[in-house]
Each structure stands twice: as structure tokens, then as C-alpha cells.
Length: 194
Image (tube, rainbow, N blue to C red):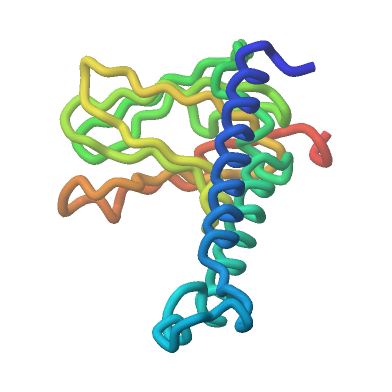
């Protein structure tokens, strides 16, 4: 069941989408070419209405808007499974510090379970860094920008697949940035690994 706030936000969002689609349809209706029998002057032959190429472009944009909205609202996107305003209590909190271009982990590897909400608190002592978690094939799982102290950068994540994950900086912070990599930093257990 939807939370009341989520229901309100989605209702407003879908209402805005309906207004935009209604505006596009009204625009199309207003600018369509009049039937040839109603044209009184030769000047009207060259103007008024949407050209064939413009109609195709309008249909293309409308299709992209509809597909884009359906995809972002669908459960196919992992982040849509966790609501930003949902009160997810992490079962584990991991604090990682960054100092002088180096990730300082509480343990290596950090062991977490599949399906368990994990809160990462990342603290920079000197520069703005990035905190990115990557699969072994190099694809990114998630990332966040890490702003220096006194700010504590927090993100809660639920891993869906077991395996080893690497951590690397995703924000250019200086000449040592390319070397900010910790291989096999996170071990996700559960699922097929049990």
C-alpha cells in the first residue's frame, strides 16, 4: 500500500503529465492545417498548421516522454524500489574515512548480506572526493559525492547480488585521484553463496 505522502506526490506528478499531454494535443488541434475547401486566400497555402516533418518530431517527442515516464515509474529501476521518503532502518552502519587520497575502511572486506539495508557514512578529512561502489565488470552500483568535514555523507543501499565489490573515487580531486581504488572492499553474502 502506498504511503499518503507518496500517493500525493505521484498524483501531482501524474496530474502534471496529463496537463502536458493535454497541452500538446491542444497545440496540435489548434495548429493543424485547415481543410483545403475553407482556404480563401493563396497566402494561406504556405502557412498555418504543422508540416509533416514537424508532426513526426512531435510524435517522436511525445513517445519519448511517455516511455521515459513509464520507465522511471516502473519497478525495473532498482532505486524505485526504495522510496526517498520511506523510513528504511539500516541493519548495519559502515563508516569509511577518506584522508590524503586514501579510503580508510573499518574492515576489509566489509561483509554485508543480500537484501540487508546498509548505511554508508563517508567522511572526508581534506578534499571533495567521490565514493563509488563497482561490480567486478566495472559497472557502477551507486556513487555519491563526499564533501569534507564537518559534513557526514550518508547513503543507504540494499545489495541484490552476492559477490565482491570494489570502491573507487568518482570525483576528480587531484593528481592521485586515479589511484583511489580499493579492490574487493565489500563482500556481499547470501543468495547463491549460502
